Length: 449
Length: 157
Image (tube, rainbow over the protein chains, first blue to last red):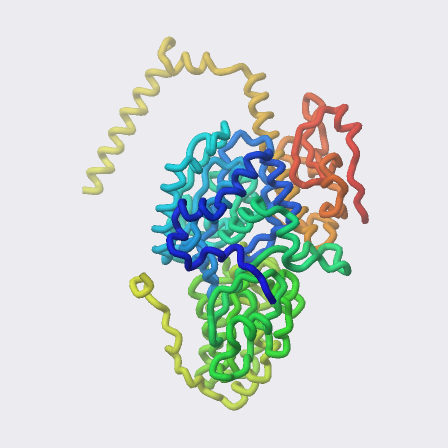
């Protein structure tokens, strides 16, 4: 497949972080186009493009913007979700580190469209370099008149952008958890409604968008709706509710592949194509046993499901939670799925904020059960209990406030249904994990920084 | 030390209590004037009404967002589809909002911004009421005449 990258076009180029470089290569053209339109026209344009959020849920961006009250006296806030904590995901980091002005242009356009006068970039604590690069880029924007009062001479269009370092937890990436954390509180997700568009940060209307989503907005305004819709997958005519999966997508490939990395491709490429044609295939000439299609919380595809298109519908049809962040993690055929699932459960148990009992208890007990299985002491009943836990926690069964529990449940559900034999075999034979109990170390903050 | 602190607090409270009693009996103290300068009851009622209207409009906005989110995956046939946390009762009259169920808000001509989707059951003292249009985002206040002539979205049961 021949495709000219757009979002990653300047990645790796010297000085790609500077305003001078960005403007020399056609930067801020989208913003100039936007300022010639009214804010509502920009919203309509983004709606018409079919852009769906790249952060995980895939909600239509233009529609999300239109939820903001039209007659609100303000202030309206824009929160940029750069917390990027989903395991396997690193596309936001690449965008922020290498092309910060592309992101900032998207933020400015989005704030113009939504009439937001303040934008907070909530950046993952561990992303120290991103913070420094963005800090410099924001200063350049203020100096050049892209931020501040009357931006580019547009009377009444004022915008201030603030960088806010995250609190170092997975839950801070949840929309309302992020808002709570931004307000200086513990990042406990809020009950919705009120939705952030009605009552968000500091009890004012707020829109929360992901970094990649905003980078796409830049190109929609610069290149037009037709260009955006020429990429990706149109809606399924058999499904009247399908919104299609348009535009470019940054696929993060990691795990057991020869060439892990971030690949920009139109939405809809299959997992097999992505792994074989771009990521160099499964490492050490092995075969794939399972593939996580969009970040750990989406569940697993089995080897027989690798022809699944990685658009907003494909993984759902294959029993996964969704496309998520399109972080593809490949697991080879020599890896124990019990170890993989244990690692997943440990992560979610560690990251559960503890606010909802089903999530706090469910994730913790799933780790204990998997520990028992890994010690060779598991029973068949343990597998049923694990499934019962997974079916009972999350927004979908209606027992939790946020989707963390759904993200914890889906790997369990898909692993136990698609790799049932391996689990039953391990339980029957009492096989101990070859990796031991302390195989997955959690890096300390000082190690990361 | 703690006991001493309690005693000091008690003395302080007693002093404050004495002084407030004195001031309330004095006819020309600032506190008394403040009571006299309070806005008339009619204005307080109007302020309360405006506040109620804002709360009700936010409730309708939340209903709209929940309706649209639910409509992305299937027809919205009743309160259960909106989720358990959506407020479906108007704070002004404690009556449930009138909502047209089963409207496919994702595929309405012109986005449904001219069609009524939900509204307050009873009118306010002026005869108007807050309404939510079928684009699920527009919330406005309609006079009795506007409301009577506004077209309703077509639902299905």
